[in-house]
Image 1: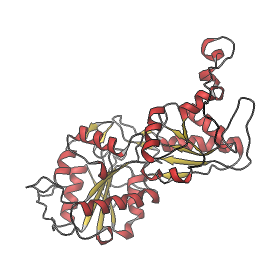
Image 2: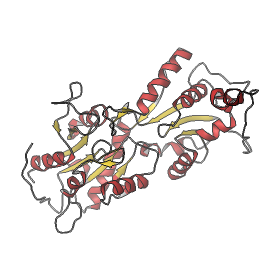
Image 3: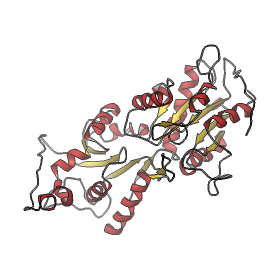
Image 4: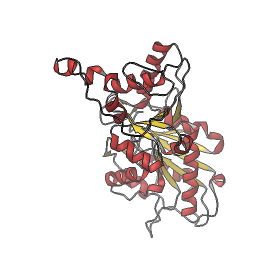
Length: 357
């Protein structure tokens, strides 16, 4: 799609539209910049001041880092300054859970204990255990990995780290903040805990529940994402499908869980607030409610495009790019976007043309 170069002439007192960028598969792939991604962002600058003249934010289903850390990562890859108040990650909406579960323990699942601790402190969780801490206290839950019989061929012994806290609080919730490194270990232990009333498992005891007593929160529903390899890579949504299948097989019950991330409503409520904040920051007098259009640029039809299409009545317009999960000709057959372009640069040029800028 050939579109002549234009100059942005946005009214300095109001804005009629905003933009929501996905990150992986739109601006970069596995930390490698997609050609012309930085140039696309520069099209949204005032040519004299270099400051943004259009309210825009970044909304990703990725996680495992704070919004500030993600902004720094994007900035380094794009060689372009991205401020953290423009960035939303998959677990941004879980912050209210810190208050909800303040009187009980929460199990936080991420790749490392350090990541869980960092995010717990960032979001204000007081009582929590990282997945790694939980396993250190109960290595018998995964004998193939921790039993000396399986690892060294000697009698089955475990190195168990004792919990030195004065009392153990019942676990009321499991929060998967990011995809763990060991799927098998995660599936087994999460399934075990969800079959109990309190998560306080011992080698010879489980306080078993005939109903699901512990809440499960999943940050990032994406089944796959677009990396450098030609085929998409499995991620948290695929892990969830494994947990659901095995939990159902084991208990005969459907797994109960809450999803965060695109295309689910909680994420978009936070996204709308971020857009409102950017409108105020740019000095515009209008608010999110006054915007005629929100353009959502993404590569994943099942998250980016579906989420925007769900908000079509609020003026959201979906734009699908071919640089990530989607690489097909034409539009996606199951969840079609309003527009399809080759890359993010073409997406921005299209938006400017549609807005007569």
